[in-house]
Structure formats: C-alpha cells, structure tokens
Length: 524
Length: 85
Image (cartoon, rainbow over all chains, first blue to last red; front, top):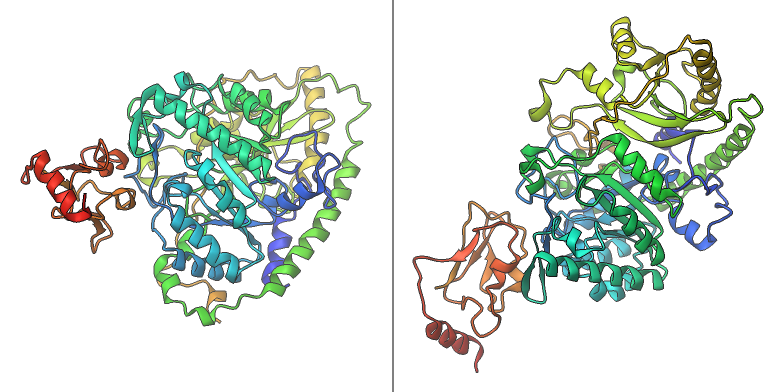
C-alpha cells in the first residue's frame, strides 16, 4: 500500500455508499456481501465498478479498444465521428492491437492500483472481432492474472461465442438489448450482417432479438453474470423497455442499466439528424423506478467511451495514449501484485467501517411524523469522502439523492461540465446547471456565492449551505425534517417539477496533461 | 466489375477484411482498407451479395469500381482460376 493509494482511499471514502449495483432491497454495503445475494455472485461483483455501485467509489476500469468492426447498424451510432472532447460509447480516439492493449493494461495497472477490470467494448462490437478480442484476453490473463475480464456486445454473434467466453474466464458480459419486439426493433436497427447477408427491417430485428435472448440464456446457464444495457429512446422503446426488463429478468440477467439516448445533431447519427430527442431526467428516473421492483437497476453509469481509463466519472485515457504506451519498455513496468492486493485489503477495511455507519443511520428520521411526506430530490456537491465539501462553482457533476424521512437514496449523477466544447462553448454555464438540476428542490454545497444563490432561488432550487463539510446522508435526513417544517409553516413554497430536466450524457474526460508528460509510476 | 473502397469514406474499421472470400482486402499504410481488383470476384461463386458492401458501416464506400466493368462470366472465370472448381 503506497502513499498514493492511501491518499486516493482518503479522497474517495464515502460513507454514503449504496447497495451494490443494486436496488434498495439489497444490503450490499457489507463486505461480507448482502444477505440476499449468492456469495459466489458477490465475489464476482464486489470489485467491479460497473456491477457494484459501492465498488465504483473504490475501483477503476479500463476499456481497450481492440474491436473496431461491427456487425449491425444502430440509429444512435455514427461510426465516422470522434471528437476528442466528447465521451460516449462507440467512440475512441485510437485503436489498439491486442499486443499493445496488453502492454497498456500493464502500464495502467502499475499506475492505478485500483484498476481491477479490463473490458472490451468496441469501438465496434467485441464479438464481431473475435480473434482480436480473445487474443487480447489471452495476453492480459497471462500478464496480469488478478484482473477481471469483461466484454460488452450487441449480442448478434453471442450464441456462437459463449464457449470461448467461458474458456477465458470472462465472468461479466454486457449485452445491449433495446427491444424484444421486431416492430420496435426495426425503428432502432436499419440493418444487421448475419450469415453472410445484410438483413433489413423487421427480419433484421427479429434475428437480432432471438440471438440476444438465446445468448443471454446460454451465459446465465454457465453462471456468467450478465448486465443488460438498454438505450431509452422516447416514443420508440421507452414504454417497451418494461417488457424488455421482464424478459431479461426471466432469463437470469443480473443487472439492468437503462441509459438515456445521446442524440446531439453534431454527432451525425440517424437519430441526431432526424431530431429524435433523448429522455428528460424525470422520464429516465420514472422508467428506472418502474423497473426497479423487478430487478437490480444500475444508476451510476456514466456512458463511458470504448477507451476510457480510470474511475467511472473520470477518464484518464489521455494519459495513456498509444504513443506513450509504445515508448515504454515492458521490462520497465513494475507490475506489483502485492501492492495491488494491499490496496484491495485496505478497501475491504474501509467498506466494513462504512457498513457500520450505514447501520447507525438506519434509525435516523423515524418517529417524527414525517414518514408520510413525499420524497424530494436534492443535489449534492461533493469532492468525495462522503462529505458536502465542494463549492457550488467547482462542481463538474452533482450527486442526486431522493430524500424522505427515513432514507437518502442515491439515484444518479448530473453532469454540468461542457462535454464538447466546440458545440456548447456559448452556453451560459449557470443556466445550464439550473436546467440540469431543475427536478431538485435544493442543492447542498460547501459554499455558494451571492449571484448563483439568487439564480438558484429564482429557478426554485434552494441553495443549502448550512451543512458544509458534514456527511451527506445524515445531513440530508436532518435537512428533510427542516424542509417539511418549512413547507408546513409556509416558509418554503413547494416546487412543482417542470418534467423537462436536461441530461448531459457521457463520462467526463479529464483535460489532457501537457504534451510529453508521462504518468510517473510507469517509468521507474 | 471489381469492387473498390472509397478511401475518403473508409473508417478503417476492418469489418470487410475477414469477410472477403478472396482475401482481396488489405490495410493501407494509413490504416484504411483497399481491394486488389485482380483478386476481387464481387463474391461471384461464393455469395449472393458482395460481402464488403454488406458489412460496411458507411454507405457508398465499398462500391463497384466504375472503371473496371466486368461481366459475370469473367468474374466466375477468375473465381475458378483462383480457387479451382
């Protein structure tokens, strides 16, 4: 455990961790694993940032973009577009060979001890490039056997690949399933390439759906954990995703991740060019909530790129470009397994402490006659440690909690930074923030200036700075009783939601380091 | 006619390369893809449609080369020459 790791742990210790990957019914805060989860499954998910909301505070992932080819066309994807300031699935800046990918994994694992997972997510489809994908897995599993391997796929080639996936000990597979009805599917997929033929329309969607569901069944039969990603496309598959949720649950999917459509016209996708809108934050939450009773829902997805590196919500890929990786002599990379194990042990200790904090919180807020009050959404500016410790103006994203008398439940992140400077440079940043938080009744911050305070109040969002540097969850619960009193006494006017809260999708991409700068630990 | 790849449109995704039954497709120095017209049979003798076009994600990128018009007999003769009966 080196100094860098302890500092990192200190920064990210968040006593407010949520159920792992996970709906409220689980109690995944325990390092021993949640009571209602198979210990074997818990062992697989506990260090995977995408499968466990709790884990994503501690562990990082990297995607290696070794799979450029794809075998289907989706209306939300344009393969010609790559903006370096932009972050979304299907986009990469550079392609990797399997050999360079394995080298990159070693370099990143040596620099970022919390990196536990390597995924292949494109930029095309991992299983449309089986030789490149499986060669990469082979090389990584030899060089860094403690790293978990995962892949994501559209599912078309999946039934033919399940045996190889199992052979390489890939124990997490994400399948993107946007429909189970070809009539819906023909509005999402213009064509697929299957059995040496291009299929269009309803036939294409029917074949794709059959292959996806068959592949899902084959994976779960082998006890491989499956996450299903679905893109929510208002007016196309939004209501239908409830049926998708039922069908994938029935076939043993572990987690469902419903993501908002990204359809900015400048990306040049079919949906972007035809004015198909994405969902509002309210619509997305409503759909996620209505599926939640049926299975675990992922709420912390940042829709990262196929070459993302780092914790979810940050992207350090610009520190590990091909040019830099190629320049590294592999003999110079110190792959220190014991340092990585020490980091994981420390995380387990921290998680145990958090479990105790969670138990202490469980009784708060009861017996005050507030249980009947409807929950409200509150945004929180935090730089980590589970504290309200960020200045309003410094926040690149806010955590959003649904707060009631007895519970402060994390429901997602809201980005407020510019994700493509070319496209949004003229926007007024303050109004962008009030738009992104317009479904929240308040925003908890360490500090907020007079001018933004006024703007927030005018937008019906209470600036709350009375809990600066305190723990997020207890503060939210305490604040809720004050809020209800304020409503009852008429001091606070209840807010009616616009239902139009904008989603700024995709993961934040950290600014590039200065040219020539190589991460220190790579070069001994 | 043999097929050709419009390099301005090609994204270098490599999807076409393994699908070609004639191994006529190879990478250029820039990481894009090109078709050797001496090896291309437009998939005649193998498949109903040209595989490079069927799999290519960009419209109007793998197209019949207007400068190399060939009839079906010529293409079939090439297939037999390359692969036997």
